[in-house]
Length: 245
Image 1 (spheres, rainbow, N blue to C red):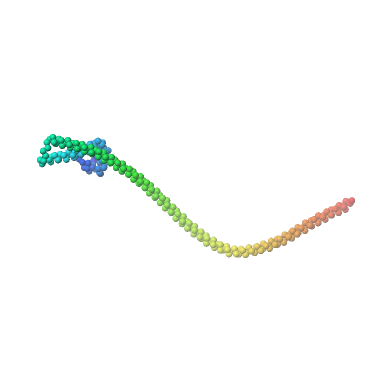
Image 2 (cartoon, rainbow, N blue to C red):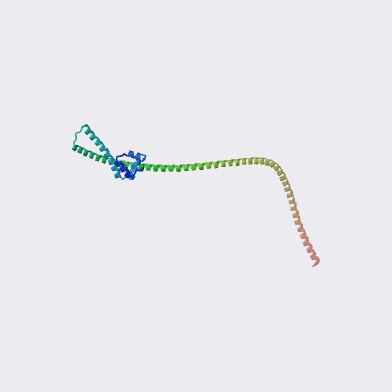
């Protein structure tokens, strides 16, 4: 059942309390009904309903007290006395109305402040939750990235282990080759010594041949000079014989 403004005002005229209205119209608590009043009723209407409720309660208390006094015969109040008492009660009710109005305004301000604070807290909590959510997402991303890097590092470590195994095998082969080469080196050293001796022998032979060649060259030059002298002598002799002076 939907509660309308007209229906609420009609119900309140019948003196039905808000607690019963909350149950009949499905409100969860008094706060929801208060929010409904702010949305559908003016502040003046709310205040008037409050005053009517107070007056009804006050009048009911006064009338019960008067009837009780009349029934037991304990009061001989005249009509004028009752009117005077009613004036006093009316004055008291007006004062009560003023006090309740001030209290209502105070409570309204407090209620608004509570709502404002609650909304502010809700906003802060939402911001904090959003922040924490982002941090959780970021942390999850970091963990995922770290896990990926760890996997890559593990794979790299395995690859390096394989490379180390290969290098160890190559090292063993190199050691074997080195030992073989060292044995060959001794043989090569012996052969090298023999070759060096042969080279020294050939160098000495070359030096001897070079000296012999130099001597032959010197003798050849000397012979050429002798031949040239003989040619000049022969030419001079022939010239004298052919062309005597």
